[in-house]
Amino acid sequence: MEFEKYLEEWFKGETTEVGIYMAMAIAARELGYPEVGDLLEQIAMDEARHAAAAALIAGKVEIDEDALIEKMEEMIEGEKNAYETRMDEADHHSDELDDEVITMLKATAYDEKHHRKMLMAALEKLKG
Ligand SMILES: [Fe+2]
Ligand SMILES: [Fe+2]
Image (cartoon, rainbow, N blue to C red; front, top):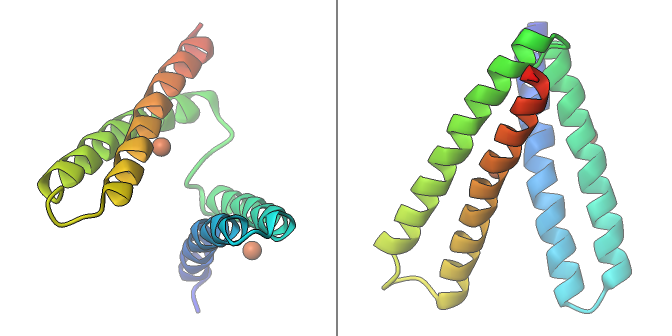
């Protein structure tokens, strides 16, 4: 396998694992196993670090100020799109989805909006 292809698969595998382990942590806590939840969350954070290693090796993110600024601007746009798309989906499917699901969609959409604001504040510091 080409190394670039392996890096892409590695990155995708790790990012998927972050989401799955975090979801498992929530499930474990809801089932009354908080310690299992904590362990699963710890694994998720390890996988997030592995994803970061893969991203850095693949050059998705560079240790360079201009590149970091550019990446942050790209992510600011991405967070905006994530917010808008998720709110739209919540609205378009409000009849067919449970209230709990709508709440999860909207709560995470607001998180994305907040990420955008955080990134903008961080960008000011970098450009400062
Ligand atoms: Fe991993
Ligand atoms: Fe986000």
